[in-house]
Image (tube, rainbow, N blue to C red):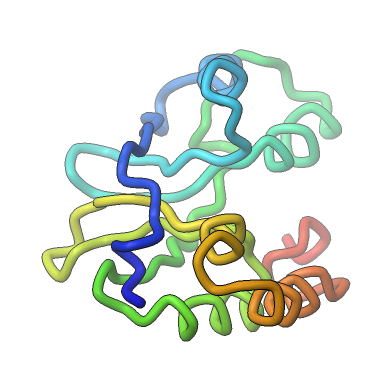
Length: 145
């Protein structure tokens, strides 16, 4: 199965100049925990509810802090024509629960989450991916910055 068959294609973007209050409002309105950050037609980062809590609020920054100050700048992504099982294995290896999905022109076309994998690939694949994602530490841990 290809990623495009499992991903969510209706993806909200936040601009790096918007505030974390605006990003949090979007997350609350749409019941999501992460937003791709886009500038023009380029994906420049990701921001999660955890980024806002740990990198902003816990550091004494307020709700008017710009998204660009707390977002993850390393843009990890997959392609819409990648194999979903391979992407799930990669998510485990790099310890992320969701990835932006781009087409071969590197335009954002969706987002794939571990929940999407669960709905399509079954318990065994998801269990394996969650075990890797949940391992402590790693390059995407909040303490790695």
